[in-house]
Length: 337
Image (cartoon, rainbow, N blue to C red; front, side, top):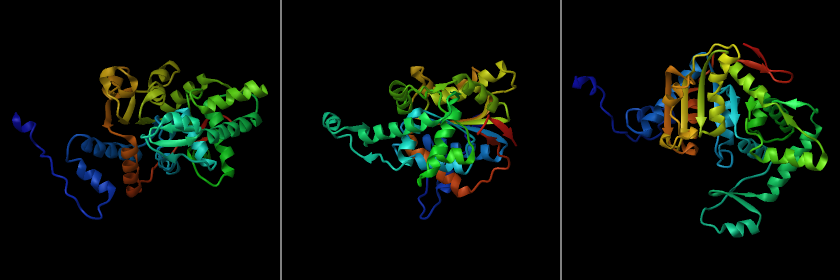
């Protein structure tokens, strides 16, 4: 019986000059702890891309100020994801950088009272200009004032914002998504400077942009029914739960689903506090959100380290997907395979 458990020895990691990131991650799969989980995450993502899978990507945390904007942009442009669900903050910061403004290298060893006096906002070790943020708020409000006056799903509204960015030289998340017609959802849009900008627009100009969040729920449930699905979560929060619940919602709307087939999560949160961000995929199986036979892995580590490694390894492999669902986002969400 002992032999059943002692089949595969761990292998010490050998340092090699000029090794590819994908080769390094493969070697880490014969080590332990988060090194092995990272290696497995690459395998699961690669499997998603090679199978006929619809991939949801949940983005939480201050990833854009941390320098991850073009990493996510690459995933969109290469169609390594099929649908993005993000916090509003990440999308605001994406617009901020795409129109030519910056986040700045700062420090945690700073007097925050002095930063407030200088109108500098701090995100851990990153700084931003409050005045530049307000200018971006105003830009978003100006664009929104020109949009047709009707109820929007967040996807429809964010698509219009993405198209407004076409005239700017810099690429970004919303701009890239609008170009390749990848749907982007933000179920907590009000929890961001985008929501603040729209509220100010209403208070000062009387222009009210209204959202039909139920459209978001119905659409993402429909997307989950198109084929087998995979999920990738950077952090947790609202984006994670919103994607998870597609598998719960779909049967009520008449769609047949069996839980997300593939699942990757990069998080520093732990499950024993009972919070969603640390919730395990095993727990999600009890809800029917994750398939009982799913290929799944959680990497407990900083996403600003893990995501660039994973995406670089995917880039080295140059995987070409066989089938990509193409959307027409200008009118309604129509689907062509």
